[in-house]
Length: 225
Image 1 (tube, rainbow, N blue to C red):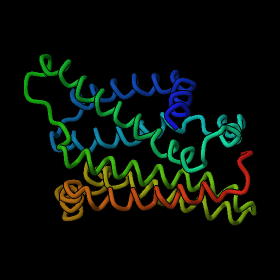
Image 2 (cartoon, rainbow, N blue to C red):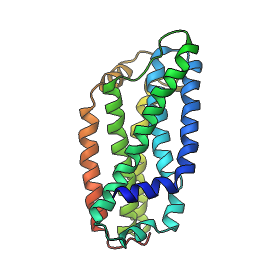
Image 3 (cartoon, rainbow, N blue to C red):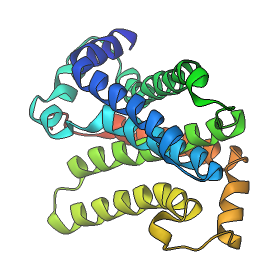
């Protein structure tokens, strides 16, 4: 499994590096460009969430054309290990993003003039749960499209993925009152901020959906797409 992960990351290293540079620039823009201190943490978490998944799946169509799953299925590696590598891959990128964030904070701190606002440990765990959930749904979308070939079935599968993705990022926009659409200090914003300190609500579903995704991958009848 680790050899597959190493090969995948090595193959995608240019794309991953580009998103890491983009992330670093985004962190700097948040610290110096976001006026309200309370908005810096949710904006940082949103950037890490979106760019982590983008780094892993930005070239998903190319990956499908290359039939990488078919190639991996021919290797003397069990299917569950291959499926597990799909779950671990974005987690490795996420860890890299988090380390980049904290390393960049040490670089920026002397120039900033005051203490930088960072996500707490609990918020990082919550973010990890969100990444697990959205990643598992992306993988379910990939595998179910192979199992269900009819157009209406694929449309429903896409809708399933889209709803989960919007549900994952929308709270960040509500908390930061993006473009002034949601108001200031409303009850919903306070609820989301409180929920961000409760990682169990995200980690447990994240692990559960990931296991479901792994099971679906193993039961696929074809690995040619």
